[in-house]
Image 1 (cartoon, rainbow, N blue to C red):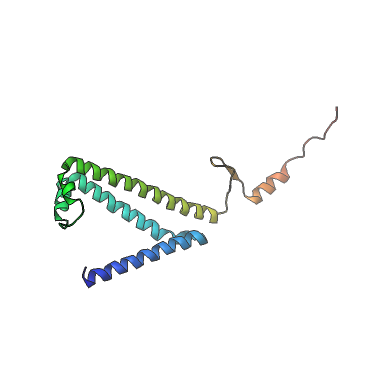
Image 2: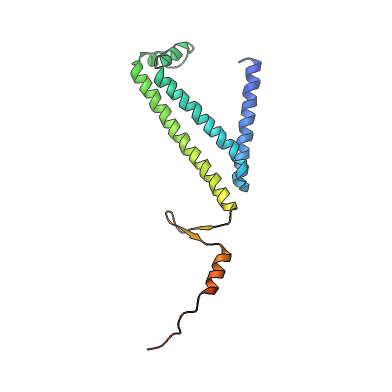
Length: 160
């Protein structure tokens, strides 16, 4: 690596540290706007990995060309070259699809965190979670007190 590439790599690394720190701070302090840069990075990264998968699918011979360009001292290079090209493409596509699935899950986690923080800052409806799979929506306090006072009292208790 020459000096120009090293400076670019350091700049990108510092930018990623900044974006991750912003997302962590936004989640901790519950500021939804601080999470957006990290979410955008995740979407961009997912799109690039999808393009890699499409490239492997459309141009399967590019995998063999890439392996040939690896340095001669690369571990297991000869073993990888001896594998059938169709089988190698399927293995790579399986590996990329597993990675894409995991990245999609992480994107949904960040999006749910963003929605939760936005919903928490919006106090129209309070959400009370009673268990793992049940949620009770509570009305705003003012509406509950107004409608509660307008009802007539229950009939008196009569003993038998």
